[in-house]
Image (cartoon, rainbow, N blue to C red; front, top):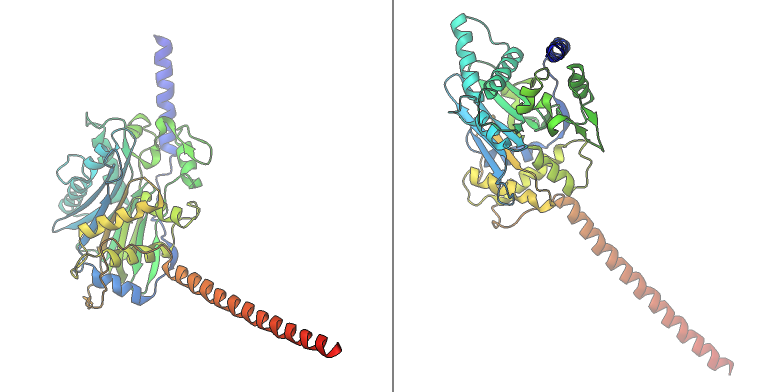
Length: 397
């Protein structure tokens, strides 16, 4: 008995030591520049989106036997707007994702942000985005630990939070779901992922005293879940590795639109284009997404959730079968003319690199014509030379 008590105290001290040394992230993160869109492309997509500060979302479930574990959210009140994606994983991951994204859940992100902001107002304190995001995420996870029906699953989280009285939009991610910000100038920015390629994240988990090791091209954790980038049972079992978010700020008046998506969608695009997912997505993904959205619009009206569902479903053509979900929010206030948007047949989906494919086809055709022309010219020269040889032979005889 004494031996077990000593062991329990030892592991408790180890966890506390790891928790004290765990790098919670004391600074806001920097967004990564991943490319540029021309303004005409940005404007065409803006003109297809609903009015300013509206959100449309889509999720592809039809090809998944478990009906998918992704969940999206879009909630608002007079104080703030909240939108984002949870990518559930493991047995019961969809339960954890639903608990966080549902407005009425006791463990919902919306509920805890609402409670936190009300507390700040009552105490007369200023909002500190980094502290607020970390405080809320830990509160959500602690509440999940009290839920009896959560199961063994977990979920990642990527979200946008817009305070009504703040000039900056706040974005946060726990895990590997991409956040994409497109500015009015066409610059494309994205977040830093907490994934198996993030060496700093691996070091953070190890410094917390949690065992993790590299497998064949992938990082494995106990229970096959990622404790530092996961809400759910794993975080309860490994209390030294709480889900701390990466947090970013960006001026609202410089944003054209944002996209938050599960990694299944971006992985499908990279697979279709034979890209290494360690390199991450580029502005070409956004171009492809915009092209699909405009081509799959069923009416001249603004893009709807139904349209976004069809766009998400279209990425299944790559053969990737992970959950695919996306949330798009328009920030730019200018309402542009959408009468020039061409609506194609519902089943018509663009190739990933349509312009490149056209150039290849034109090149092949031009090359074929040139080859045939050259062959014809050489054959003509051959016949002419043969006739001359015959005439020379007759004269000689």
